[in-house]
Image (cartoon, rainbow, N blue to C red):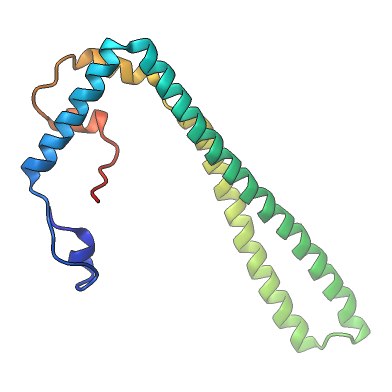
Length: 165
C-alpha cells in the first residue's frame, strides 16, 4: 500500500509504502493478542473496555454539548441583533443598503448555525447509542476462538480503522 497523501499530493510527503503482507501480519497479531486476552481475562477485559468507552463517550458528549450550547446561544444573539436592526432601520440609524447587507449576513450565519445544531443533535444521539457493545465483541471472540488466518469477514468484524504512522 502506498501512502495516500503521497498519491494525492505530490510533494506532500516522501514516497513510502507498507507491504500488504506486513500489514496483514500486524493485523493478525493484534487480533490474536486482543482475542486471547479477552478469552483468558473476560471480566478484566469487560471492565477495561467499559471504562475506556465510557471515558471517550463522556468526553465526546461533553464537547458536543458545549458546541451545541454555543451555537444555540449565538442563534439567540443573532435574533436579537436582527430585531435591533429592524428597529433601527425605520428610524434612519441604518441605511437601507447597509440594513440589507447586514441582515443577509446575519441570516446566512444563522442558517449555518441552525444546520450545525441539527447535525450536532444527531451526532449526540448517535454517540449515546454508539457506546461500545462489549457483549457483541465477546460473542465475536467466542465465535473466532483461535484466529490463525485473516479473512475479509474477520477484518470486517474486528477492524474499524487502521492507522499507519
